[in-house]
Length: 345
Image (cartoon, rainbow, N blue to C red; front, side, top):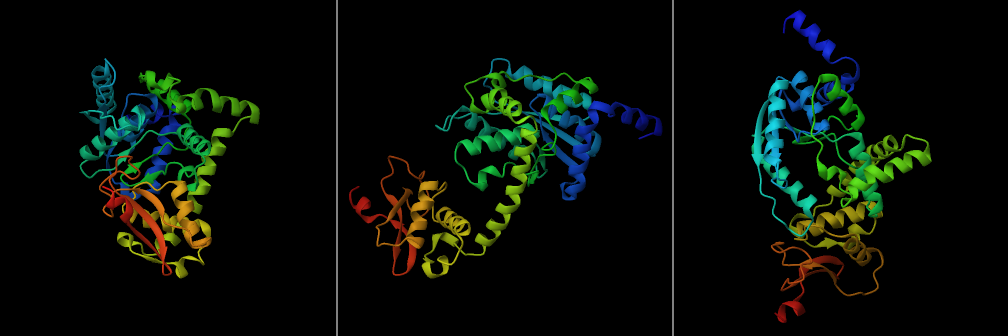
């Protein structure tokens, strides 16, 4: 870039626009393995649009991946407008049309699953940058608190979890809007972001503002900081749990489990259940199975889900023909098909 062009570019990114570009630059320095060729998940909203602009200024090659979920009448126009904005910024762009299949998890979760699948298929080995901000991180932590989640959920989103990168986790949503205004970029407001039917929307529009008022400000930053602190603790506990082999749900020696601190034990048991065919062990599962180790009173087996050891059916599905149970037998924890249930089918 010529010196005059660079000077003009630097002026554009000064002032209100700079915090977003600075965050992307810091992310790139912290994660050099990301490389020079990246994708950005672009919805057309202010967060992802500001991220796309900053990425185009910091990386050699940027491809904006715009997912059209087809859930709104004008979704195709919104997607094409976002792709056009990306091209004017200096990125290439691709619109990904997806079909959102209801799974019973709710429309938000179904759309998210379809979106991530499409992004993963289109990225062609490149990392994908996501526009999650500090506000999104704070909302994630509050949702986890409300559900009684542990560190695994309260640790929030990671800045880098290959292939997904989140450079803006330290940037407020107000800053991305300010950056778009400074850069002359018009963003799209997703009507779903104002729909009180979604818990996250009510947290954003009602709960967080009230907490900020009551606590005198700084709540969002405090929640995001909490996520970062918990992430470090959780990483260490996960590291210790990973040292206990649980391949294929093989039997575990109770004598080796008994000395483990509870936070490590529950993680070992989660890994064990997942390896044995329980895709999403619940808190109740973990407490009951842990009691087979820490509070052994001769209790019977613990039902941990439907299907067999291959996990071919959804755990806990009401129409599962068999039950998978964990039991203590001769000083070992074992996973097996509940033979009484199997005999009745």
